[in-house]
Length: 266
Length: 240
Image (cartoon, rainbow over all chains, first blue to last red; front, side):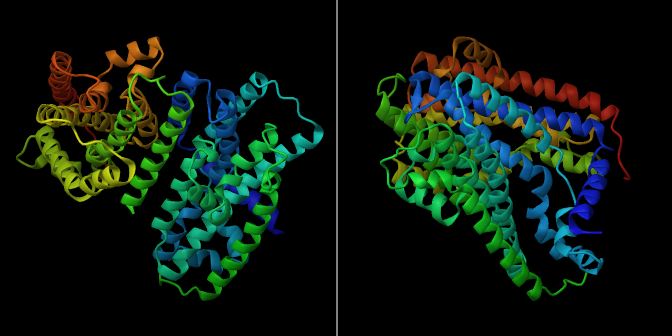
């Protein structure tokens, strides 16, 4: 059985396991939708006072947030537990993955699903469609294609960054704090266009921990906000490239980490 | 690490308001300095008030350890209050003062103007703590029925940060939402102390606002005791 089939079969099992807790499932979904609604309403209240925030109108900001949420929802549905890697390592659960006759990476990834991602997807799709209508967007085939790529790139960027940060625990035993740092940088780019912040911050989220490529840069392209005279306009197209680069880097780190692994003796 | 997060949060609200003000100064009714102070104060209070008894109760209910709490010769409601107050003092000493320093030196958080304001603010924060504690306590009591609060908690925290005016001051809300939030107890947690601090609410209005906080604190304390009495009767201890 090849890796992909195995992965999806395990994911199905994980979904079935989750669906056993039905009440928790529904309250959780409602909780996440309320949370997202509150977030967007708060942005709305602030922006509606002035019509725009540094040139970003309300619906453009909804688009920005939902584009982020779209990539994030796929990540949180399938890969949320990456941050739990340190617990697997400390408790010795990780040894199970190594003993099974399949790639430990697939065993690790297919271990769990986080159903709350469903609520994020529902919210993101609704928000994006509303924004699309209200902004009267007319995309060419290429832009649609790029939109799809940007969402996948967003998922990959968040997943690989989470993986890289979680892998720190192979060396240090713990990585929660590093993961929290990542999550928090992420929270900042999701609400607001990066161009309102100072230079250092923009440099960090573009070059060092490139979360801005999850929504800000692709949104520039998709909303026709790219300034053709700016020497940095090409960044609007770079999300897939950034994602691919991160995939390569994270896979190198994962393999280095595995080679270094010594069991906690669970 | 917590402090770094505080720094990031302050950084983001600082830039958002700064950008908005550069664009259209005067759209908010207060000066940029006041607004930044308000926003940073919201983060500062969040640290002090991060004492929810709901997580403790939920955890005790889930593991079944709640029975040891109930066997103690101590009123449970009072026990929780003392516990949360302790946590608040801890947060105040360890995190809040450095956070205040960051706000003051890096982002231009204004110190309270005069003695009266400082005293009113301190009293108001304390009352806000009582209100916040009791809402959390009620949520905790709910876990005795539902056995878990994790998913409810998401919605709860989101609604609090919205209706309490922690992120965006209530006077910027559209009329309908403002009326709703004025009827809810959440404004007593953040909005009232913070408005007193930046003096958008002062003099007689400030005393009136304090009165409202006192009302909510007492009312919620009674509701909490009543509800706890009810759920205590139907408490199931898991495993035990």
